[in-house]
Image (cartoon, rainbow, N blue to C red; front, side, top):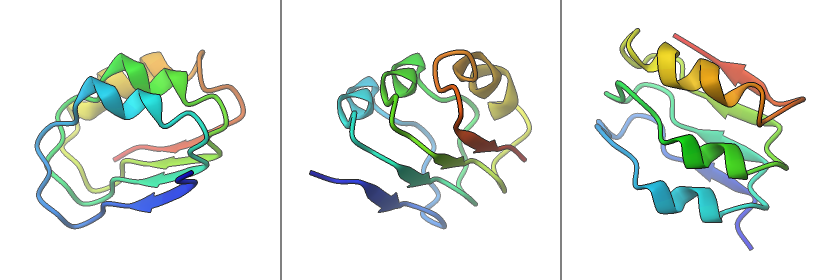
Length: 79
């Protein structure tokens, strides 16, 4: 099972909702991409300790802020 995934610096513009199926994910690094939103399904990853969205466009903040209530205790790093 995947617990850490570094997808930083890949010019990613979107994430599929199925990413939420990775429920054992502890660290997801999406820094320095081109994400303007993240799927709500990221909130299913209840074991996440760190979600790094730094270096993405400011627009990603809106959808990422909605995850905070689902991902309690996670360190969500915003641009």
